[in-house]
Picture 1 (cartoon, rainbow, N blue to C red):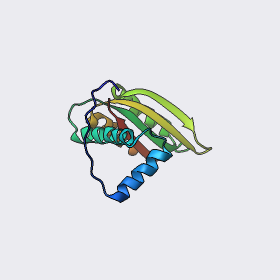
Picture 2 (cartoon, rainbow, N blue to C red):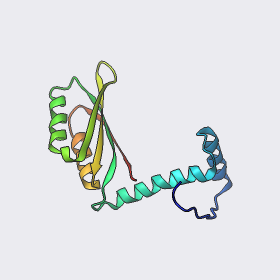
Picture 3 (tube, rainbow, N blue to C red):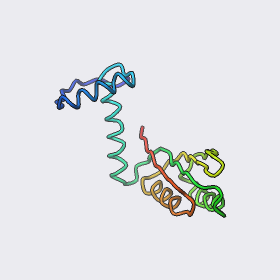
Picture 4 (cartoon, rainbow, N blue to C red):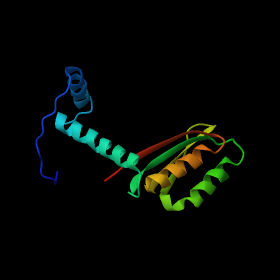
Length: 136
């Protein structure tokens, strides 16, 4: 860790401490502090995401769709081309005979990423869209 470390005190109900200790053990964290730092990173990313604004975000959009729906590949590709400035890369995976998954690596403002996700959700045959955002 390159940053200076400040020590703080945290007061939690015993049930939360028990759950935290279980996760620390299960996920093999070195300490409670490391687990809480990870949690705070997610908390900060969620906060920045919900604030919106012009901040740049990085993340993924995962799309699950029925590839037998007529024209779905063309519709997905059209949206991706129209919003190419927000897309860094695309991966296409065949989950089964009927179902495909695409993972888009994205970078942009909260508004751009949300617009892209919503446009993908609106395509007939799309079964699920998940957005995961991480920040530096």
